[in-house]
Amino acid sequence: MIPFDFEYYRPSSVKEAADAYQALQAQGKQPMYWSGGTEIITMARLNEDRPGAVVDLKAIPECNVMEYRENDLIIGGCVTLSAVTGSNFFPLLGRAAQGVADQTSRNKITLGGNLCGRIYYREAVLPLLVADSRLVIAGKGGVREAAIHEVFRGQIRLEPGEFLLQTVTDREFVSLPSVHVKKRQIGNVGYPLVTLVAVKKGSRIRAAFSGICGFPFRSASIEQVLNTPGLSAEERARQAAGRLPAPPLTNTEGTADYRLFLFRQTVKDAIHALEGR
Image: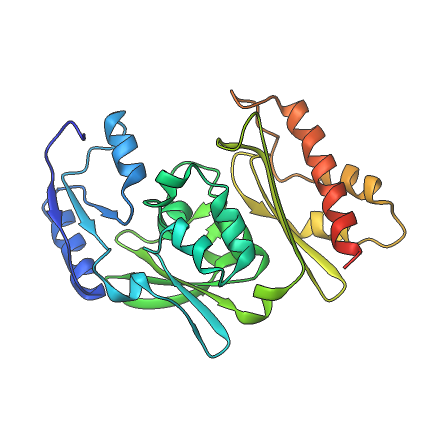
């Protein structure tokens, strides 16, 4: 249970949600948007979040769609990770989603919640990064669409009062040769030491990572190395490890040195897997 009282709102449209948030903010209620609610509950129990009101997005139809529209796959921000995996619309995204938490939690955790959450692994974003997906964002100014690389830089960068309405992915990326690998300390549930997602588009490998640094990322510098002809897979993996955008993490899951070892091995294996396809 959350150890304090808060006001609860469940709007049925994008405008109602944005208007409710603005009104509550003006009243000093420190509102938060709610999709799956797992992170809000966790942080509230730890007394790290204490919203005076929550705006539940799950009754907004646009937040719950998962369908193709011509050449675009549209997934609403309130679609659960279990539903993403079960649909098999985007197999690589499904595999990444399936690696997050356990089944019971994935029944509640939403795609939008994972992308926008404070827990910094945010692994569901990785397939969207390699697919150059777009994000549909709603707020007091209405609805806008932006390239994921404009909005997601380590974490999602939204204006105050905005929320993630949908992701949009070109159908082309859904069936590309792909690799998903998650290395944990132990077992099949837990935070990653290294997670890699990669696709092969034409002759080039695109890759995104979580766990190795304190934020998920896709790196043009690393992809340049991965696609350098004449270098062995082992050498490309070694050079990629030298181009990380931030120092590797050391935490309770593992040390920086161990993460680097796993990163090099995982990258080398991914190169071998994709170059044969």
